[in-house]
Length: 151
Image 1: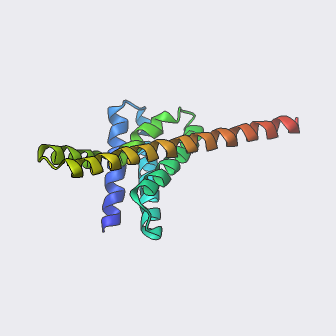
Image 2: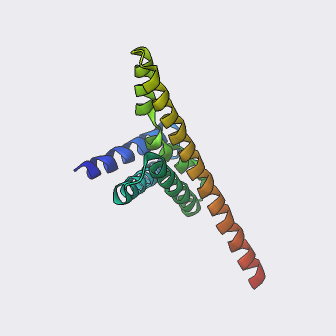
Image 3: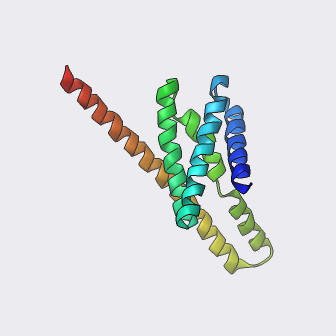
């Protein structure tokens, strides 16, 4: 049941952020699907291999980046239309809230630990997207070279 709720909420978040960011209407559903697949891939890998949050976020962001490039080629649109709404489920907002709450309650040691976790999580998301971008550029470049040699 928890798996289904994660899928539903990650899809809904990505879908409605595509609406908020004014993506073309025909891309609302694909943007939601990309966000849900990225989130679920990270969560599934985390559960199967008992990975820490940093690796879960990295795997999910990498999957999200690759799926964004694939959908960009399919729909002939920029990959950011799929990437930006899809990254919303990964944002560590709950942890940032906990850090702020710890600061207000004067638990500074706990707040520092949580803030470090937020920073590391955000960094792993950025690195996952960066790796996906480089992977996609490498694949596209090799494909162009392959087709140029055939002529």
